[in-house]
Amino acid sequence: MNLKTIFALNAFAAALAGCGSNGDVNIDASKASDDNSTVINNPDVSDPIVDANPCASYAVDGTTFKGSFDGADCVYLAKFADLDKPITSDITLAEIPGVHLFKGSLMIGKNYSSDADLAAAGITQGGDAATLTIEPGVTVAFESKDNYLVINRGAQIMAKGTALNPITITAKSDIEGNVAFDDVSQWGGMIINGFGITNKCDYGDYAIDDAAITTSNCHVEAEGKSGVGTTHYGGANNADSSGVLEYFIVKHTGAEVGAGNELNGISFDAVGSGTSVNYLQAYSTYDDGIEMFGGAVNINHYVALYVRDDSIDIDEGYQGTIDHALVIHSQDNGNRCVESDGIGSYSSKTEEFKQKLISQGLNSRATIKNLTCITSGVEQGTHDPSQGIRAREAHFLTLENALVTSAYAADSDPAEKDATHNFCFNLNNAEDQAAAQSGDLSVKGSIFVCQDLTSGKSLPNDTTVEAWLSADASNQLFQADTEDAGIDLNADNLAILDGFYSLPIADMKINGNVTTATPVNTDYIGAVTKTSDWTQDWTFGLHDGEPLWFN
Figure 1 (cartoon, one colour):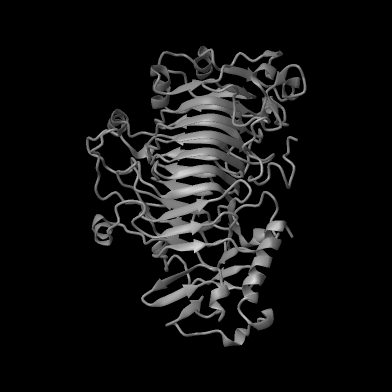
Figure 2: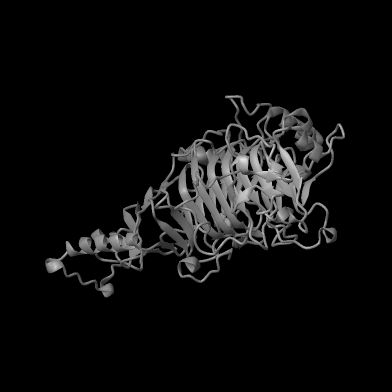
């Protein structure tokens, strides 16, 4: 038992001691109350010692609903919260010796699918509806693979952990120790719905930077269950706030909650830049680690470990910045470090429509900087091959200080492979290739070391993707043959990483020479260095548990 648990138990015991004579307290579960006019601990599981119960509670029409406390854990039945029972009052999940266990899904705030319903409810922005507060050090667990967490438009989550007391959202099976380190789909995942801009909605002739931009009937259906589980996102406020996530971890996500509908670690659905996201981890997820459907939320210091699909997925006109991102695929799984799309439902749109969105700046224009992407080189995992960065469907990406490599991969004969299965960088569509030529898509201060360096057709002026990347002197590319000593990071031929840490620029060697790559506004390339390790203390799986496969 760790010290934090011991202290918490002692504090609880002291609280109980103050409730009875001589410090003796006898709890008789047979006297649990069924009186719905008073305090109800999960309407048929009650604890008569209300004052000693630290579980979350809320009131509706004179009835108070409260979790049931067993001295360690707080348990919340589906009668406390579920998709058909969204919580519309502020609630707090306090630090306790054990976990907050939900038997149903947790939805904060009601879902509204029309302008009229939103107006009638007085909900126009984050903060107008309920707030879920999660205290530092709290672990939340969901019992079933059917369960997931939703923060609806107008609602907020205030989850501000610390490096020594991060907040973790996971599954009951994980808490019980019944999962392997890389198991996925133990619960659904997390959805945050915001009022930000998504190019699945109609903004008329407004440009993205027009302060008067507006839209109507912008209610895009989010991933999740149908029926009572249906929720919506979208609006015209890219500065909207859905709250705070800080030192926050989601683990073992991606269960199929509907036919063909596996959730991500966290879906940021049109989430605005007023939302603060710092020190975030997605660990062992079936689908994407994080996916941004429009909006402009900024994410600072992000770790994606053992994500089976895309560790960072961008779509629908996302405009934010992702700064300091460490992505590590598992040895035998993982798709792309970054999958970035510019226009929602791209393949169904006309060229005229696409060009109009681009002229308005409504296509995705993300900035990703200080990225380390370590792929495994696996040709076929759960989804697609392990690959680096793909910009497609009119995503005008700005990439700075990225280190993308498959140099750790222990692979089979390259001659037996698809020539582009393990690329470092891909430009996939004509709009992206044209943007690279015009300067609307840029890559600077980056290192690419892969078996298959690039893929995608040439730019309109016939420059290849590889030649375009190399034309900027701040970048450096090196083709690492998996049958070659180029994969040996202890050899003189190639030295770019020490584990997952970026080496100092002066110590980096590519093709036997000190790297010529030049970082932008930093003194290193990649996400993290050994001398400035922001992953210490709070992350899961990097410094503890199962050793990283390339170590």
